[in-house]
Amino acid sequence: MSKTTRLTMAQALSGWLAVQRVEVDGIEMPYFAGIWAIFGHGNVAGIGEALAEMEDVLPTFRGHNEQGMAHAAIAFAKASRRQRAMACTTSIGPGATNMVTAAALAHVNRLPVLFLPGDVYASRRPDPVLQQIEDFADATISANDCFRPVSRYFDRITRPEQILDALPRAMGVLTDPALCGPVTLALCQDVQAEAYDYPEDFFSPRVWRQRRPRPDRAEFDGLVDAIRDAKAPLIVAGGGVLYSGAEAELAALASATGIPVAETQAGKGALPWNHPQALGSIGVTGTSAANAAAEAADLIVGVGTRLQDFTTGSRTLFAGKRLIQVNIAAPDAIKQGAEAVVGDAREVLEGVAEAIGGWQVDAAWRDANERAVAEWNAAWDVATASGPALPSDAQVIGAVWRQADEDATVVCAAGGLPGELHKLWRSHRPGGYHVEYGFSCMGYEVAGGLGVKMADPARDVYVMVGDGSYLMLNSELATSVMLGHKITVVLLDNRGYGCINRLQQGTGGRPFNNLLVDTAHEMLPDIDFAAHARSLGAAAEKVSGIAELEAALVRARQSAKSYVIVIDTDPMITTEAGGHWWDVAVPEVSTRAEVRAARRDYETRIDGERK
Image (cartoon, rainbow, N blue to C red):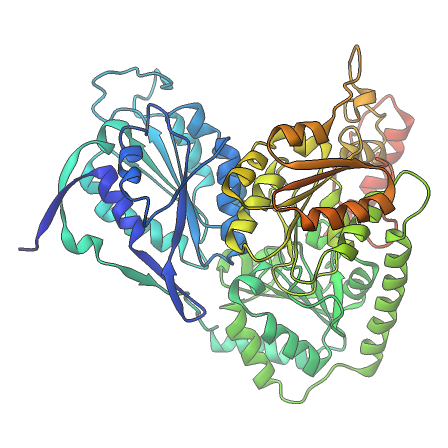
């Protein structure tokens, strides 16, 4: 018989997490870089006590908001290219449900994070306990069932021995490139404290390595033949290129063949911005060069993209084109009528480069794209040039880009900024662009910046955030100060939700409830964001205009702690060059002539969507 050791379930869980290993660039290291925790009655006596004994091998970080700390954990995983992750534990009730939004974000973006919310008593002895949800028709329901649709794997631990099976299954999901996403293990609070005789070999270190499946031969040969037959091929690089570590293979293939490359939000940075075949961003927030190439292409090869509507222009940009999808997840590979090539991006790109030999695109296709890039670069100069008026988002982006070094990372998530950044930020290398635009979650930015900094402390991290997102969730700014992880926050104050205000008017609506001036109010708040940031422990200042911003950015780089720069911006200006149509449904019936006109235009456009 194997030897056993008697531990509580919480002690066994934390001990098991601490010995999970991963190999990154040939170096073995812990898979879990730590666990975020806000303790309450549902976890402080169980997992809290266990973590206190593991501090040297499994660091515990205290957050200020459960959603915020989960965002930091998710950003850490993304910045680590899904090779490492963090866990998050909360009490029962609001502490747990505060993380549901973050779970949805991780699910949409296919990012690994382990959620360990406290749960009700498995024994039901003291029911109903504080914060317990009671369903009169189903006694097995708890608030944590909210995690089910936003978790790749969900389990409720009602017996201490169940973790012997649940934990390896959880790690199998977290480390699988096709299944990757959030895992929730709801921990009944009485079970956390219950003891069991666990086999000692359960706690033996295990190394998890990235799986790289090669494609089916017929699918692969079909891809190579399609490229050879194409007159105007285009590669669309998604996040899977970066998670596979395939950027060198992509660059080599593009250079050897002349095939142009456009990038999704998640794939941005797969090629340096000045690579000869780089067209920049594609889709609704795409460059004019990339979108012109998509419209003229006769073959589109998606690599590691899930074909979100912003990428495809709501299925109009690729309509009528031959579409091949290279993806490690079969459900993504077959989307929108695509011909599937299921496999690891690096394996596929490396294989294509070898199989295709000396084939190159027609000179006319190469020349057309070079001209389009030159035109886009001229438009970029115009959009980012400073002027005397209230600055635009684009002008602020230009200033931050000029002051940031090539190793810096820009972080953003929601509003108009992600669209402008997708078009205008010029990535020098992978990891320099970190924008959460799968869930487009307001409030991710500051916490996400902290997670990025924790993943790579040597990089400068610039968080670009609007006043709306900052007001929604800013508490992890204090955490960044507390942990000594400096981030620079550039807060663009356009006094409301400028992006949605523009969308509202673009669909025929009148300005209503988006900019503060268009809301129901007795008086408008004069919010001193710099003073607020200083109250959280950061250094902060407010500037006026682009020249003052650039000078403040120099001071921020010299600061030893997190630094916030506030600047007023114009809510109405957006970059005119580039872009593509986006399907936002317009009412069929309205008393406004502007809405009726927008509906007529909408009906014309949806006829062009790829069915």
